[in-house]
Length: 324
Ligand SMILES: NC(=O)c1ccc[n+]([C@@H]2O[C@H](COP(=O)([O-])OP(=O)(O)OC[C@H]3O[C@@H](n4cnc5c(N)ncnc54)[C@H](OP(=O)(O)O)[C@@H]3O)[C@@H](O)[C@H]2O)c1
Picture 1 (cartoon, rainbow, N blue to C red):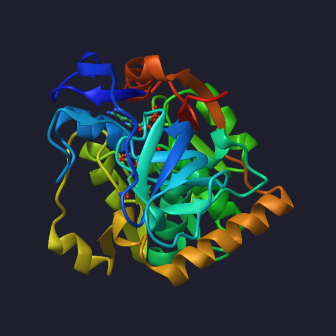
Picture 2 (cartoon, rainbow, N blue to C red):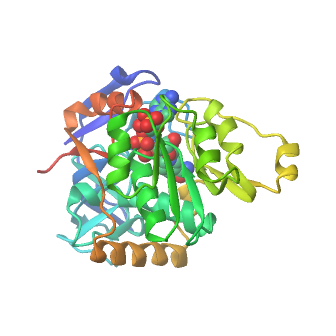
């Protein structure tokens, strides 16, 4: 089978498509025929060797998939061949992936494989950040950085579904248009306006109850200034490659909280996951949430897909389509 490997840490040209044997599912595992692999910014950080605790090269790229069950390993399984699933694995940019049965979820019938490929990582991250950790509720205001990205477009829609007011930042007018089309109340193109000034103007100087920050560097520093008294900033990543620290003095003066979020600390929380999937189904049924998929690449173009995300050329979810 074809599988995309990161051969060494570095730029996207270290990516190589290899011909490798189809994996055998072990006890408690499932072999999935991958229809669509989701790309995530974490794939780029892993390739660069910047992902904390990430794999050592050579390693198969990707961890988010949607597809059909091809076979199940020895022992009882909740899955059977032909089931449509989405979930996590090692080596998702591949024609087949063997993964633990409990890392898979049923694909909602309302979603095609392209859209389903955004649910395991980006939707669950958006949901748990805003609600499980962030406690966002109706009437509050949330600031979302990189709002037009894969995670960002889901954060915006989840927050709107909860009745919050949403301020979202992005780098182009086209991205602002996309944000407005999915309900973002205040899209800000940060290349033409200072987002900190804009947040102060929009909130009458008060700031936001919740700030979701994934860029790092100066964006993190300025985001701290956008938190309302007794509000919270959740740091999810550092796409700029520049993780930041925060002075304790700043926290106490405004009674603010800065929290870290990493999805893998939440995936085994069955109750939180059930809430997330219940709300997803309700929002899909109501037509108030969609996964925006604007960039679909073949497996062989994995390097180009990662380049385009890192160069900020993409909006919404980016996928590799392996079975069309
Ligand atoms: N902690 C977790 O569990 C978790 C889970 C999922 C994602 N994340 C994090 O959430 C962020 C978004 O992930 P994603 O996969 O949905 O990616 P994405 O948002 O689709 O792509 C990254 C976006 O970041 C913005 N950006 C700002 N500064 C950048 C820079 N210096 N270089 C590159 N991009 C920059 C760009 O948007 P503009 O052009 O509009 O600025 C770009 O489109 C990433 O930091 C990722 O690591 C964390």
